[in-house]
Amino acid sequence: MDSKAIQKELKENGFCVVTEVVPEAKCDEYLETFQKWYASVKDDGQRMRTWKSIIKTHRIGHFEAAWKCRLHSKPVFEKIWGTEKLLTSVDAVALTPPAEKGDGQFREPGGCWLHLDQGVKRLGNHAYQGAVYVEETTKKDYCFRVLKNSHAYHSEFFKKFPKVADKTRDYEFFKLNKTQRKWYEDQGCPLTYVPVPKGGMVLWDSRTIHDTDPPEVGRPNADKWRCVVFVSMTPAFWADESCHEFKQGVYKKMQLTTHWSSQGQKAFMNYKPKKRKSDGAFIDEQSIEELPPVAKTKQVKLLMGVEKYDFGDGKPNGPPAPTWIP
Image 1 (cartoon, rainbow, N blue to C red):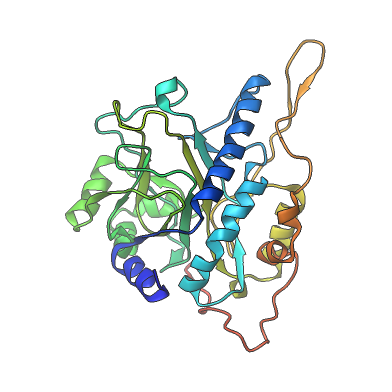
Image 2 (cartoon, rainbow, N blue to C red):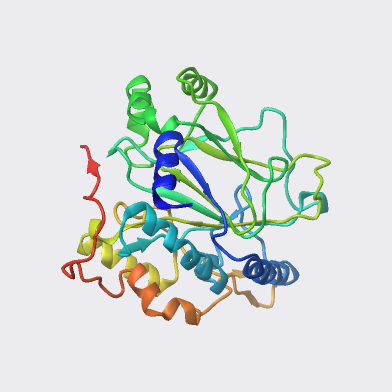
């Protein structure tokens, strides 16, 4: 899919699926790596902290497989923004065995956690969130959903629900209630399931209302894992020195972040190891003690603000920085 087609779908629908971002053979390799790690954590008696199958602990976003997926996605973000000079998030990974094996949840009628991730202070488009699918997902599996075209009503939504606007000034995540969801549907924003092929990627405007729906009972592929690497990249030109310093700290501490990658970034804390036994033995919840080789490359250091781009080299720097309101 060329850049114009991607941009057109994002503008019209608020989301877009891009295929063949990661070769299938590489997906198999990355999936096996994640599965072995997951099994080792379980075998060691560690408590797997997840939310909707999303893992933000163990420095999982800095695993070699996670960084490689991120790098596979970079050309897609280059097409969107019209520049190679990007900064990246170090987002979470969604990883869960088949619910049929008792480690996960099934779809429930009316189940919903539709939410938005962009608060009222950000005017217009500030980012495209992304998810690289290491394993295929169909409408019957753990499937991504959006309220189609909801990005176009972001500002109107806050005018209609001013209390929500106030809540998102400091904490941008907001889960819709039934009244708010119906308001979007009344604007012509239908709930839409978005299947993604193996090695593909879904992108969505950060103003788009979205969630994921667990797998159906009796689905055809009962042995299928959920394995998704979340990633977002935005122009490095948008970031000031404090933003670069923030990213450098994240890189050094091997922290994970929210999807914001150039402005208004936030990091998740690194959980300290917990005691396992009365004899004082500890469980290492970090899983890795140093960055993998791929994360030490020049390309990754540029993406993390550790090394700086040359904005005066005559090559495109991307669009102007987005607008913030008081």
